[in-house]
Length: 222
Image (cartoon, rainbow, N blue to C red):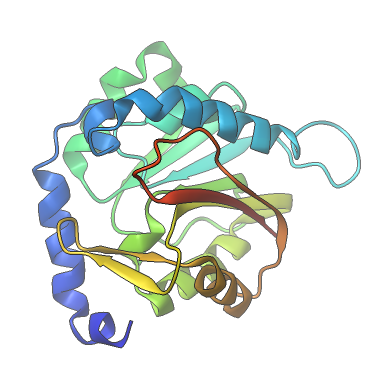
C-alpha cells in the first residue's frame, strides 16, 4: 500500500466525500445489499455468543464500541441486545444524527457518539468489553490500522475482545476507487494483526452471502 501512504490525505478525504453522498439507510450502509443485513447479524450473533457469558476467560457484557457505525445498524441489532452500553464512532456526522432516531428507545443506552475517522480515534483506556470493527478497515492505511488496533488493545477490559469482520480479497490488495478503500487478502490481514501485537483466538467465514460480493471473514482478537 505504498501508494496510499504517499497519497494519504486524498485517500481519507475521498472516502469522507463518498460517504457524505450515501443515504443514511440500511441499504446505504450496505452498498445496496440491505437484504443481507439479517444474515450478517445472525452470523455475528452466533460468533459473539461463543465468547460472552459467565465463567473463566469469558468476555463481559458491559460496554461495546461500534467502529464505522454508520446509522447504528449493528448497534441496534447486535450490540445493544447483548451489552449494557454501546458507543458509536463514524466519520460522517449525518449518519450519527440519523442513528439517534434509528435506534429509538434503545438509543438511551448509547454512551457516546464520536464523529471522527478511526485513524484519529483514541478509545478510552480500559472501557470496552468488545470493540466491533466491521466493513471499515479498508478505509485505513496499513500503518494506521496497526496503530488503531494497538490503541484498541489498551481500551479493552480484562478478557476483552476485538472483532474484525470485513471483506477479504482472494489475493493481494484490491483498491476500490469508488469509495476510496482497499480490500486485503487474509495473509495480509493476519500479518497486520500480528504487527499490532494481537493474536487470533477464533476466525470464521460468513456463509450465505451473495456469490458476487467479496468473501467476508470474522476474526476475534486478543
